[in-house]
Length: 189
Figure 1 (cartoon, rainbow, N blue to C red):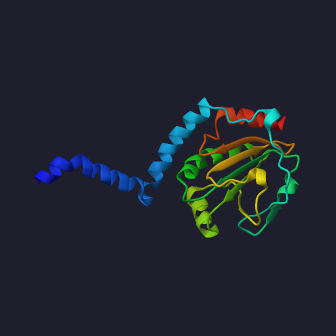
Figure 2 (figure 1 turned 90 degrees about the horizontal axis):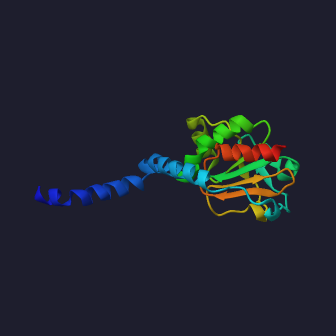
Figure 3 (figure 1 turned 45 degrees about the vertical axis):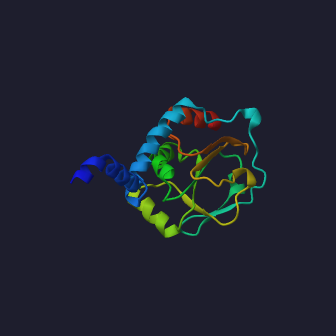
């Protein structure tokens, strides 16, 4: 009994760490990340200066949805595109998904959304259905253009109608913020 009393803070710390880094801690991590992403999105700009925007050159990139329908990135020329790489096991990805859904609900008819999952299709389908998400999910059929390549999740790009990268954001962000909506409005004009 004396041992427990002396080491209660150490025991609680170990239990907290085990919980935080186990599958049971995933929602807690996502919630913490969401709070941080809201603050950082408000403090720091996401938009790349117009003079420094890279154009996506090799656009021969094929994506496929759950039903086997393909989309060729070339066919999106002249459209504003929001591309998000994500996975079901990624806490920052999970943290930003509700905001992404809200943004999709508001702009899905004017902006092309490409949510490219890096996970098993059946696992992704279960995740989408469980959470009630309706945004379009795709899987890569071949490698992305070099300018859109990323080894980090989540990574989100906003591509203007001229095929130039207006936003490249690695990590979670508050995608349903006024700043992002204003940016999309500007790109759609």
